[in-house]
Length: 425
Image (cartoon, rainbow, N blue to C red; front, side, top):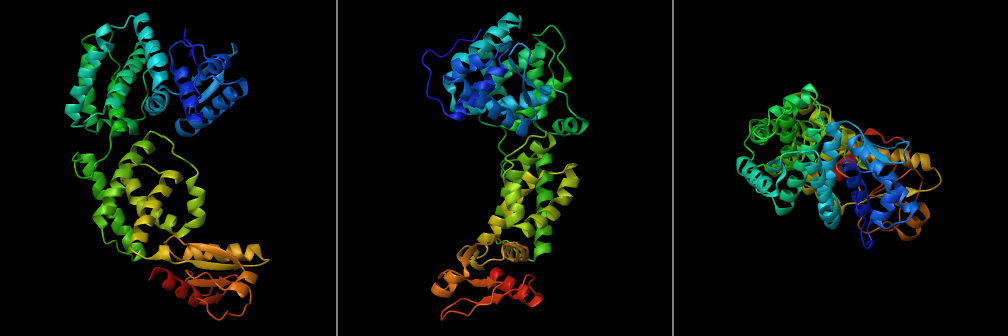
């Protein structure tokens, strides 16, 4: 039975959600609205809001659900693989945001469950686990920080309990092949051997796969040090992708190595997320599609061969992040951030929106479009930093003004070429 905090802390929403989710992961815990109220020191309305927000987040990122059973208890529902990947993220987050709860609630409950289920003590002894983690650190040639070691101790104990209960993750053929091809797979063998020496029943083969995935997820890609064949394969695919982007756009990057390195760090992690269907923030794609349609379209075309190489399709969210990387590097090559396009506004909002969309389709580069009423322009002129003024409305030029283009709904070819030249050169 889980104890409650003696003196409820004033917790942030993020801290409360972490504690809600950790409670749901405790073995045999009866998690109710009342137990959440007691643990988080909140009223019923806030407790239910926290549950709803936590549910929304794990549905979006991990395809899990929080369901209410007939006894009034909340429980997690979803595959064993998704549940473990979700805890991987949230336990690390909790160690940052609510370490007291992890130390005084989550950890003791895990230890109690390990004892009650009769799991051999050497398997979950903290000193033994630290020694095992240090061994893995040497094999992987990675230095685990203190918080990572604490995370791994707790996480491996949780996996022991799940394995003992027969809750082993299931992998698709593509996920299995990818994980077995990674260097982390062989390090995971060492942990499985350690288990096999002490666990009476046989260890499920997919536990080795999952342990490899665990170390894959903890990895920070390093373009200078990563030498595994899959890392080299990804780097070659990225070099070809950048070359395609350059050929499609006619734009060069003065530091192509720097761009390739940044894309490698991002895509090495994006591959794992995509293959294991881990979601990321979904607020970006709509904005990227609206503001930078040509950049996004060109990025998709450049990424197509890499997707085919690794047998996947990136989500709109992942694709948008790659487009942002390309856009940022293009901006470094220009002085675009110092330019501004002024769109004069009046009564025809549909026409103005159509012109804005055409402007954004003209260039790969992010556009700084500022809206100014026709009356303000006629009275005060354009802002000093404006490089171009465009309007669907007839107007006289003030005494001092940047170039002005009068566009009637659809920009003609000459106008398009003139605007593109001004923005990209």
